[in-house]
Amino acid sequence: MSHRGTLLRGACIGLGTVAALAACRTPVEQLPVTPIQRPVEAPCCEGAPDGLHLEYLGVGGWLIRHGESALLTAPFFSNPGMLDVALGRIETDTALVDTFLPPVEDVSAILVGHGHYDHLLDVPYIARVRAPSARVYGSLSTIHTLTGDPELDPGRLVSVEDQAGDAGAAGEWIEVEGGSIRFMALRSEHAPHYMELNLFAGHHVEPLEGLPDRASGWLEGQTLAFLIDLLGPDGEPVYRIHYQDAAAEPPAGFPPRLPDRKGVDLMIVCVPGAEQVNGYPEAIVGHLAPRRVILGHWEDFFRPRTEGLRLSPGTDIDAFIRRVEGALPEGGEWIMPLPGLISTGPVRTCESC
Ligand SMILES: [Zn+2]
Ligand SMILES: [Zn+2]
Image 1 (cartoon, rainbow, N blue to C red):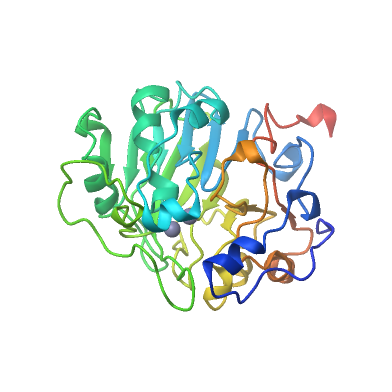
Image 2: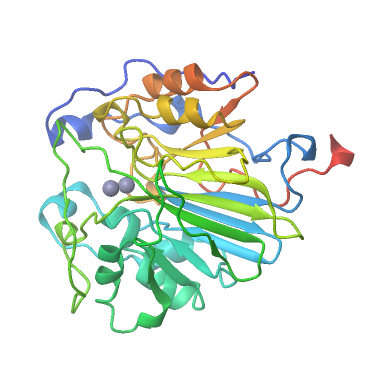
């Protein structure tokens, strides 16, 4: 049975100016968010392993712990204002990162889906200070961008662009330290931001000599999605997550048919941009038929979270939810989590079923 949130009406769609966008933002009280901590997956009878920790950090950021392994997808907390993004200079707000990022010293992999500032700006600080033994995995352009930080050991920056798969061909599995998680990059795409216009598109084709100080310098590069497998003691996948940090036109981001024939248990989808492409997210949700879909990247990242949460400007959340519900398999469920409040601690065990 699908989750039935109170859907918001009259969403902000079709607005054409920054001023109009800024005026039309929905406060969190009117959104169908999941207001309490809850397990991301139902008990083991539905296949989730004990000990999974999955936490929404905001924007494209997720913290996943399983067994001896810990992984981040690129988190973002600095949230510079729209004017600074459009015209000014932007930089990491380390106080905001430290306020909202939980302890991640044990994280050994940071996955970056694409190089826009809202996915990459905070990664250098996080990799240097908060997750100092993590490797950062992304496209070649993303790695070239991060090379601009002279304090970040280039040996920790890994392009997975050549190892990425797609709907027709398997990519390479990369095992995370600890042996309890592995991932595979998938070639994906990035929906236009507005009216077929994709801001900050393009690639950095060689290593930068300094980090960009304007939003326009954080180029998208090859956008990637990821399959993330939680592994059992025998090294076999027990739970499969599909992660996407940008809406994409199908079949971009689709995984290939893999020899293990294991299905996707959980999808993390990206809310903004869906209305700019055909078929997202319903095509990939319908294709992968997961038991659970989590809506990510839904909140307004043009203001600090200390000022409260509200819906990303220009997002029609009603339409997005209708598309998800129309594509979910029988018994499937969706969740729209509050950052920091999705699931902390292990999932329930069979005893609590
Ligand atoms: Zn982007
Ligand atoms: Zn984004």
